[in-house]
Length: 124
Image 1 (cartoon, rainbow, N blue to C red):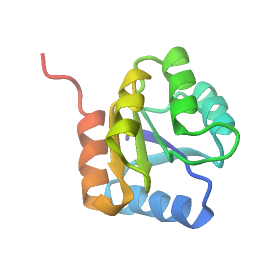
Image 2: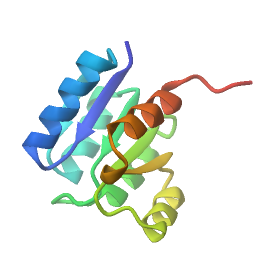
Image 3: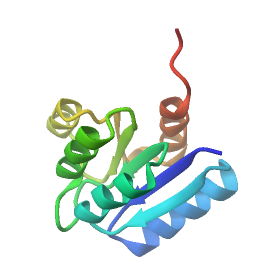
């Protein structure tokens, strides 16, 4: 079962995502973080199959956290789920190795499909 780390500063959103992933998608939420530094520390400790980051968080935003995670765990896909999706943010995210940026306004179906794609083994 794929293991996902959720980093989101709002408890209600973390809870919603955890329930969605475990009930609908049968993914295991192996950990949660409430800020950027906790996300990095948890990713290194837990070595999840995917890290889902919010962009705007205390103690390091999603870009900073993604950069550190990708330096320490380069094979672990990182996806940002944010209310602040812009082309500039997507460009910054790509530069630090983020695999996808999904806007919260795009909805959970888009998020689930993106995560499923990033968890799939690469086609050779």
